[in-house]
Length: 308
Image (cartoon, rainbow, N blue to C red; front, side, top):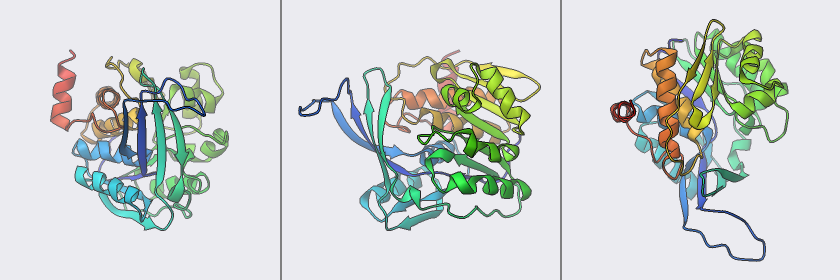
């Protein structure tokens, strides 16, 4: 897939409160931890921040509240170079997540959607392409469950390329939400557990074939430190990951997606895009906070080369 023009990312913008390390939670007792920190979060924020850090023009669609959380989220995104002209300010609180990070980097989330529950009540609009539209975690946006399929259809009809990152469905609707979208998705991103759950399959190849048979052009399965698997109907590619010691895996999948899209935007092959995505995911996991470990494009390439 050749990505041209501006990239528009639609998704949630979140203030993450990370607590680490958390081995247990005991009600009625105080558990001491090393750190409680505030960081940028949200699938839309993380992916667009990654793209901007890699030098890709990106515009974010979403909303924050008129509160300190919202102000800090916007400051971080603006500082990275994300175009925020289409981010709304509303009266509900900014979405926030308390992230409990275990010693091995795994995490558990306590999420308050706030203003994310209000946005995207109507399908998105697009001018004439070229451009690329990315929908970051359709399941985290209550209205997008209903308007996402039409939004993707409008983007395709306007001459835009498209992608969607599934995320985890806490409501358990899975394919019921996703299936109407599939015919207008150029790139489908999902982690291994999500792909298997959505498709009702026991292995990633079968899941990918199901998505391809229903209209998706290319399927990208994120496999954490093991890398990724890419299927486009003609070939399959298994991209090797970078075995960093995980500190915090929050948002690493979003950063992978941003890296993969950046690789395609710069004219790379699927293999090159997968490698850049794997690097961004690993860099994210190597530091506390979703985007704290990211590097610029040249610095990322140098970091990758050091692994060879």
